[in-house]
Image 1 (cartoon, rainbow, N blue to C red):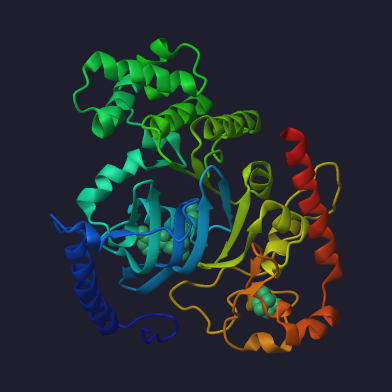
Image 2 (cartoon, rainbow, N blue to C red; image 1 turned 60 degrees about the vertical axis):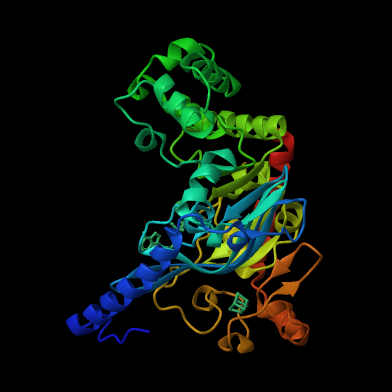
Length: 409
Ligand SMILES: Nc1ncnc2c1ncn2[C@@H]1O[C@H](COP(=O)(O)OP(=O)(O)O)[C@@H](O)[C@H]1O
Ligand code: SF4
Ligand SMILES: [Mg+2]
């Protein structure tokens, strides 16, 4: 760890870090850019054939001049085929970095997968994305995994017509031997699939001629054009108004069933997760603090951070003077504490929480939490130290989310 004085690095220290970073990044880059690599170096086997993706102890770091940012630090979870996994957590917790790692789209050369495996199921073959060279990744992106980005206006090119942009995606991924007309036909089908009525007309338009909701539909059409097995939707509705948000979520749900794809849905909005997800992963400061089925997370939330997230969202039909907010901030990812990362904000901590980072406790086959309160030897103390108010608001909010979501479905 870098030595700091008053939180600032000396120029000398910063130069030393930067030199060391260049060396480390150089090594990773060399590995990425390998050509004609033997398949055995990056092919692997799925631990469970029913999973589309398995994240296994993933570590993704950024090597910056201010030190190593441990954005994702030991994350493991599965994305089953045909299911939606919701990833939730405050801003800066590593949700996007997790999904960008799967696409191998971390900002390079600073951003690198430094440890762990990401296994991607492609039927006959399974790829370990952490070891897959760049040239093979180009084929997997779009064909096997696809991403719907946060901001449709910045991801669509303003100077090209919609149809040409969708054509380009199809041409790049499965255009071999196809005529221009065949590709355009597929573009129109993709636009129709996402509910764009006048697809032929829209194909001739420029992005600025469309509303936010329509642009988001085009982004989804582009992501789905090549029938990917895994769709990553990173905050797909944040820039949209509520009615259009609902339409886009309906659309995603419908499409997922139509093409039996898996969705990794990233959002800070628990309402969206309740409505869409089969499984939920709660991330905090680069690690998973709790994961389980949507039922488990919403009806039996366990980690104090999950409770805090639930308590801090508005509940339909309930008037409150002031919304709950989790005290404090996410810790600085360059300098993580050596105890539970949530401790400085936790309103239910125990004497033992001063100790090392807590391990994983299984509350059921699927429900896992990293918190001392669930250790057998601390259960008694935990029962004494409960923030009843927080638990009550959280559980009401969670049930409300799940009930509203079931009505919507
Ligand atoms: N290109 C980058 N360079 C340095 N740090 C980064 C970069 N991208 C993300 N980070 C850091 O990684 C952490 C996780 O970021 P991110 O995954 O984007 O969070 P989330 O999507 O949960 O809001 C943050 O602390 C962020 O500052
Ligand atoms: S381990 Fe302790 S400090 Fe961390 S979340 Fe659990 S109770 Fe809070
Ligand atoms: Mg993000």
